[in-house]
Length: 491
Ligand code: B12
Ligand code: SF4
Image (cartoon, rainbow, N blue to C red; front, side):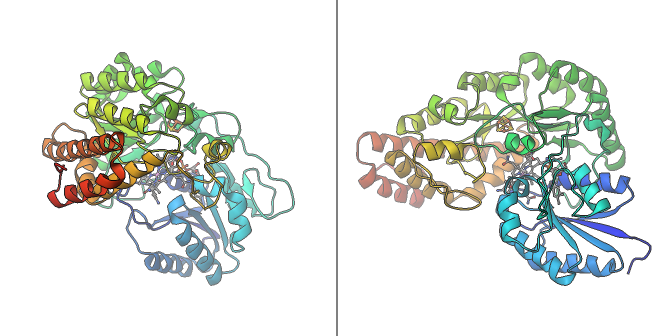
C-alpha cells in the first residue's frame, strides 16, 4: 500500500477489439501531464493499447485501488462509441469497490452524450465536457458539487461552459506512458493544434469543440512543437512520428511550416499527418517533404457532388484531385479517406466514386473501398436525414437509417459479401502503407494493389449488372463465383 498521497487519479482507456494497432491516447496523456504538473498523483490504465481483456482491466483497476487504499480515488474513463458496454462494467465496478470513489468520464463520446449517460448510469458522478485539463484539475481539487465550469453533474445548478484554452503552449508536453516496445512499431504521437475550421456533417470535431465556445481551432507554436520533438528524439530515439491533429493546417500555415521545417528537418524523421485537401499547395508540399512528412491523410470523402453537399465538405472533388497530384509529384504517400456508400447516394454517384478510385488508385492509398457512412446519434447530419425521412433517430450510439436508393443497397450488400471475405488480408498490407508510406514497402504495395484492382473490377461489374437490370438475379451468382475463384468471375 502506498502512503503519503492524499488524492489519486486513474485515467482509463477501455479495452476494445480493433483492427487498428495501439497508439498513445494523447488526451489522457495530456491530462496526466497537467495533473502531475499540479502535484496530483495520476496514472493511466490503457487497456486498449495493452490489449487487456475486460476482466484484466477490472483486476488492474482493483489492484490500483487497493494499492492506494488510503487516498481519495478519482477514476476517469474515456469511452468511445465502440466501448459503451465496457464503460458501464468498469464504472459500476469502481463504485461497487469503493462508493466514495469519484467516477467521471470525458472525451468526445461522453461529452456529446452527457445527458443520456448521466441519466442512465447512477454510478457516474460527472462528465468533463470538451477540453479536459482545467476542468479535471478543478474536479480533483474542489469535488463534484463545486459549480465547476465544464463539469456536467447531477446538481440542480445550470451547466457552466468552460472556454477553450487559446494558447496551447501553456500546456505541458503530454506524458509518455507507453514504452517503444508497447507501441509495437507504431509511431509516437504529438499534437500541434486542436480542432478544425471545417464543419463536415458526419464528423464530431466541430460539435465537440463547440462545447467550449465558438473558437474552432487552437494552436501550439512551432518552437514548442520542435522542442517536444527534440525531446522525443533524445529520450526515445524516435525515427517516426504521427501528428494527430484533426487538421494540420491553420491560420498562417506557411509561416508555421517554414519555421517548423527549419527547426526539425535535420532530424530526418518520417512523419504522418492529416489535412483538408484544399490546404495542400505545391509550396507546402515542398516544405512538408523537407520536414520529413512521408504520409498525408486527406478527406476526399466522395466524387459525387450531391454527397459532398450532404457531407457539408465545403470543397469539390477537384480540390482532392489536385492534392493527390501535388503529393504524388512530391513523393509523399497520399492516404485518401473515402466514403463509397451513404444514405442519399444513387447508383450514378457510386459509379462516379468508383471512377475516381480507378483514376487515382496508382497514385494514392485507399481504405477498403466498400466503406460506408457510420452515423452517430450526435452527428450533425442526423438532422438532415430526419428531414429527408431517412432516419427515425432510433439506436444508440449509432443511429439506424434507411438508404434512399434500392439499387445502391443491393450493390452495397453484394460488394460487402466480397470485401468481408478478405478484409484482414487487405489491412495487413494497407496498414503498413498507411503507417510507413509506400517507399521501402513495395512488397506490401504490390499485394495491396492486387487486392484493390480486384475490388474495383468486381464493383464495376456489379454496377454494370445493375444498369442492365439483372443485378437481383445475376449479382448473387456473380459474387459466389468471385468468392470461389478468389477474383472476378466471367458470369
Ligand atoms: C489518434 C486517434 C486514434 C488513435 C489513438 C486513440 C486514442 N486512444 O486516443 C487510434 C488510431 C488507435 C484510434 C482508434 C480509435 N478511434 Co480514434 N481518433 C484519434 C484522433 C484522430 C485524435 C485523438 C487525439 O489524440 N486527440 C488529441 C487529444 C488532446 O484530444 P482528446 O483525445 O479529445 O482529449 C481531450 C478531451 O477530449 C478530454 N478527454 C478525452 N478523454 C478523456 C477522459 C477523461 C476521463 C476526461 C476527464 C477527459 C477526457 O481531455 C483531453 C484533453 O483536453 C481522434 C480525433 C480527435 N480529434 O480527437 C479520433 C477519435 C477520438 N477516434 C474515434 C474512434 C471512433 C476511434 C475507434 C473507436 C475507431 C475504431 N472503430 O476502431 C478506435 C478506438 C480506440 C480506443 N479505444 O482508444 C472517434 C471517437 C468518436 C466517439 N464519439 O467515440 C474520434 C473523435 C474520431 C471521429 N471524429 O470520429 N483513434
Ligand atoms: S475536415 Fe476533417 S476534421 Fe475537419 S470537420 Fe471535416 S472531417 Fe472533421
